[in-house]
Amino acid sequence: MGVGPAQQPRAFDFVFRELFTAALGVLGIYVSARIMKRVLDPNADARERSRGRRDAILQRLHQFGVPYEALQGLTSSEEALLHDIVFPEDITSSFGSIGGLGGIKEAVRELVVYPLAYPEVFRSGEAAAGDATAALLAPPKGVLLYGPPGTGKTMLAKALAKESGAVFLSLSPSSLLSKWLGETEQTARAVFTLARRVQPSVVFIDEIDGLFRERSNSEHEAHKNLKAEFMQLWDGLTTDADANQVIVLGATNRPYDVDPAILRRMPRAFEVGLPNARERVSILRTILAGVKIEDEFGFERIADVTVGYSGSDLKELCRAAMMQPAREAMRRARRGGPARTDSCIRPLTVADVLRARKEVNRTEEQSASYLQRTGGMTNVTPELSQDEQMAAVAGIAEPFMRMLSQATVKRAG
Image 1 (tube, rainbow, N blue to C red):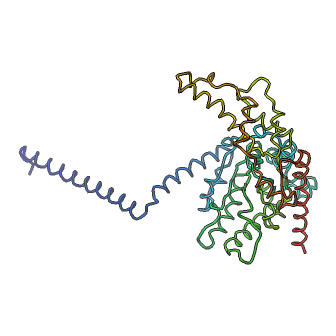
Image 2 (cartoon, rainbow, N blue to C red):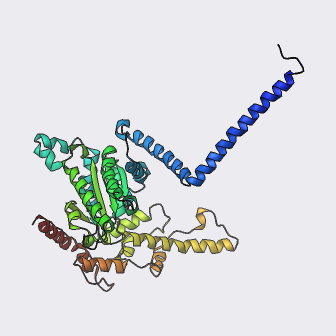
């Protein structure tokens, strides 16, 4: 029996109402699920964004040259460390942007950059086949940069990663330590497994004395376990032929607080000390490159009156000096003159820099404390000659290396 013409609109209305009701029901369920998810799991959206960033990092790693096979089966700890990866093209520091440190830059270039950039020459895996030359050319698995604050240790570490084209894995206490039992050790293991996956890589630990301070009986058990796990995995780098392009790089201004067992695993240590007069001139030229300065700008004169200034101090000095012509331009602007053109700011003069010395003092207290604890001078005063201060700074290396040697002998005994 067919449906009459009068009944067709009713059937259509019935079907439409049923579909509309079903659609509203599905929409209600979806909205309710989203609300319940947000209430029960407030971090769900953050995890979604984190997964998006993780996928973007994995894609960049593949473009960087890491094969897909090496990135398969990442653990949760390795995925968490992906966010600490810095790619060479994202690093702004380079050897050219670091003034001074000529000898140190060349030494670390030979020790770190060349083995990562030319692995066919420094192939430590051939040592297992009896190649004594490859064993001697194998780069050290640990390098320490130490020196007073503000001398460019972190910039030098970033420049090493950029020049070598290596993935830069920057570690901090927040990325390693966890309140959950056993998770800190898993993260420490993930550091080295991830570094092997994405090699060539540089594992950088800034302020290494904060993470790996000398062990004591009062130390928390979690810190002891972290150090033990980290050192065991670190030793594995020296015997694992597949990890010949992984280097651990540490920086500190308190080398006397670092655990001797950690120092032993960093056989090469470089003092990044306060710059001498020639290096201060180089730093000033680097900082003021591209800045309008007077024709007869006396770099040497400024270097002579900034004895004991670190590279960071010199940068702040130039920043404060540049405010002098900027203030003059702003005063003219308030009077109705030009204010937004390059020509409105006059060139920087030596007088501006000398005047800025009243606002910016060198890092005297930190440097004096560093020298005192490492066996140097008990105080650095402006009355001392430049040669005397530079001799004191240069003498830091000897007591530090003597301390390292004593710690190694004590451990061997």
